[in-house]
Length: 192
Ligand SMILES: [Zn+2]
Ligand SMILES: [Zn+2]
Image (cartoon, rainbow, N blue to C red):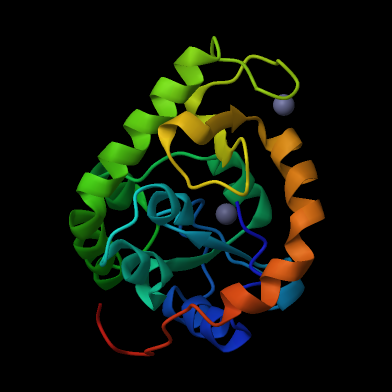
């Protein structure tokens, strides 16, 4: 889940228009009030962070990977990884689905690899949050580094629950906002 502060507002507005202000998850309208929006990265940014290569970051940050959805729909979705079935089930027009299918196809091997690292990490923790110890299903688990000064790899990974993650994020958010804003490729109307 991402509150969307890092995505440029013009990009968010174009994304909102693209789905006609309809939440692709529940099919209901979203308020025009921008403070009520959340940005869903259909292919999660975690995939490029943990399984980086030349293409995956561009795919994740591209305009067609962004969807404006309700905050509660975004939250309920948790950390579910995309599948073709999920794309079919979206409340969206065919052109939106088609561009997501194209992105998914390009990212599929990274997603599979990412899921394997996450599953292995969670299994090694007895399927419990590494911070609070609560039972943790794969789809609610957030993968983070144990040591933020070291690279992202299986040996430096831990799975934590969303509550513990929000607490950890709040502390780090401030300094990262400006940097990540510059990473989005903003090509309105250009297919990726
Ligand atoms: Zn919704
Ligand atoms: Zn926890």
